[in-house]
Amino acid sequence: MNYEESINYIKKISKFGSVFGLETMKKFLARLGNPEKGLRFVHVAGTNGKGSTTAYLSSILTEQGYKTGTYISPSVFCYNERFMLDGKMISNDDLALYMTTAKDAVEEMKKEGENLPTAFEIETALALLYFKAKGADICVLETGLGGRLDATNAVDKKLLAVVTKIGMDHMQILGSSLKEIAAEKLAIVKGCPLCTVEQPSEVMPLVYSLSESYVAKGYELLSYSDKGQTFSFEGMKYDIPLLGRHQIENASLAVLSAKVLNSKGFTISDEAIYNGLKNTKWQGRFEIIDCVKGKLILDGAHNEDGAKALYSALCDYFPDRKIGAVMASFKDKEYQKTVEIISGAVDEIYTVNAEGERSLPAENLAEIASKFVKAKAFENIQDAISKMFVHHDVVVVCGTLSILKEVKALPLETL
Image 1: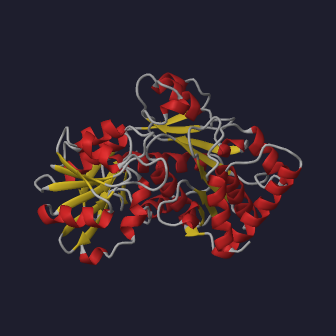
Image 2: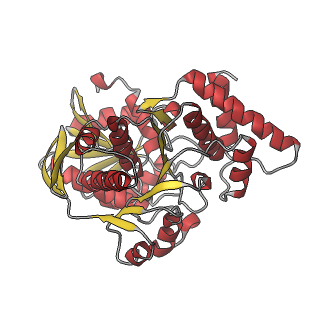
Image 3: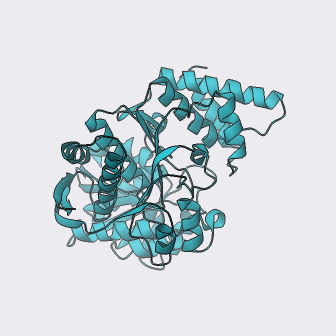
């Protein structure tokens, strides 16, 4: 298959949805020659901050000179960004090559009447094939959903497990309480140390029950601007380009993770940690874009904790500005709580549809938003943003990461 055929193939597979469990994934990897064997892994799970923490740690490892594979999901702006080596996306040719390899194995399984891998399992296998072929020194894998039954957990030998802040999300799959959700996510710890942050009180006993756990705490925000932030952690000062107080926690967790890796045989200098954090690139997380009519903010907040982080950042960065929000959401998200929290920082919300069948209709979201602020549904996001800029000089687009790609494709200089 060429690149276009590969993308069409995975889109077709995606329509069949997800099946949780590791049995099919392990059989699939075996057919592919177990590409995970011989690779070394850091496994990242959590509810919010997974992507940012993965980006920080990958940047640190790359800065130290390690050939670093990074696997994330979902991608936001380009499909290829799911598979990165030293911060660079997989090429179209390499993606087509390893997608074809994966497809051939799927066809063999189909002929033999076996259960077939899901799209996420195929993508995870593709990442492992790619990292193995390129000789990655270390691979940072982000879970898709949960941890225990996530396809990435088919990887057994891990150097380190990293778990970001745990909150309420995907309750229909992971459990109805924080303790149940935490148990699913902490199940990525398999014979390796755990690095995490201070979790809700009911979760910490689970953390401390693990044989070797480290908790990032005592970090302090020193200063911030729309260009970045400075914070202190364990006696050192660091600069990061990502904005919002919540990023201090994510960055501190990455620092702690690097130090634990250092104690496990990976040489990671203080200089590499500092420069790795400073040079981290991660779009769509309280990203501020200067437009003709004001500031446009892109953020992926889509659950209660993410909304709280966004609310705090809006209050910190734009305390005396008139802010409007353009939102979309999926039906299976906590959109009511998200809207309620964000409405505390804005005076008007315009809603649009997200991509796909999971989208909550814009009219429904607007009806909910109208309980808190003025609200209106729009057919397309460009009109919504343009109209919002008429009466606001700060506009935040949020509710789901899936609409951010569409925003980036707009002629932002004209907005």
